[in-house]
Amino acid sequence: RSGGRPRPIMAAMPPPSAPGGQEPPPTPLQYSLLLQHLVGEKRQPRAWDPAALGGIPSPPKSEEQKMVERAMESCAFKAALACVGGFVLGGAFGVFTAGIDTNVGFDPKDPYRTPTAKEVLKDMGQRGISYAKNFAIVGAMFSCTECVVESYRGKSDWKNSVISGCITGGAIGFRAGLKAGVIGCGGFAAFSAAIDYYLR
Amino acid sequence: MDPLRAQQLAAELEVDMMADMYNRMTQACHRKCVPPHYKDVELSKGESVCLDRCVAKYLEVHERMGKKLTELSLQDEELLKRMQQGTGTA
Image 1 (cartoon, rainbow over the protein chains, first blue to last red):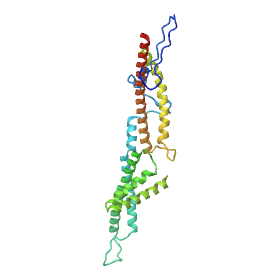
Image 2 (cartoon, rainbow over the protein chains, first blue to last red):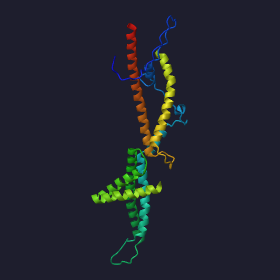
Image 3 (cartoon, rainbow over the protein chains, first blue to last red):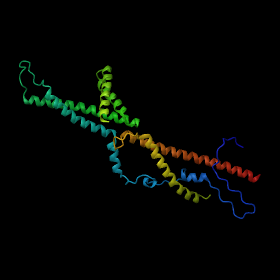
Image 4 (cartoon, chains in turn yellow, orange):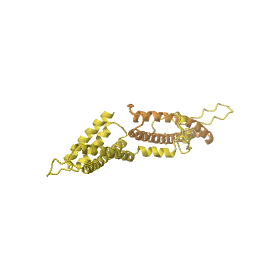
């Protein structure tokens, strides 16, 4: 007798045949065979339809549709979108500030000379491009890190934007030294937390 | 019990089992991955990723438990057979 732990036995014993009975005892229910067909090696793979199982019936998505949806949800696409958006926004912002901050065409010999149209336009273009590139890079970095952090954590709450803001700000400020990196991290994280709070 | 009868029975039971598993999985993963803040209609990236992982883990747990259960039932049937043979020859 094995000293096993008490466990309910998972096979069914056939009822004892009646004395002088003519009928053979019914075959016992073999759980192991049944289970092998249900969840074991003998299970046949089938195509399950969620509508039949209790879900809401919906037409199946084609492979191209799934691929397109996967691409549009990917982190690379979101980063590219933020890059383009940042470029446009930065360009507009740069052109706008070029109009406000007038130090173009300053001639020390003649401080009251009005700058020519060509100089002004050139300055606007340069500032616009410069701001656009910066905004595009920052936007792409922030969006990429936020998407990666969100994919890693598996949740979407305010902490994602704070963490990615810190990473982005730190990376930008780190080029000017460690202290600037820390300040950049804190500043950008606070900024993105404020934006997130406003948006949610 | 002949294998054909077992297969038929299993096919009938499998539909019930799959439906039950699907419903439980949907409930569990929804409770775990989708917090009750309904500010947006679409599932966010974090929630989609969480649901993918939840479903994969649930199905793997289901498969492993099934295999373990089959193993245990085989052991029990061996034991039962030995007991029966023991009482038969005694």
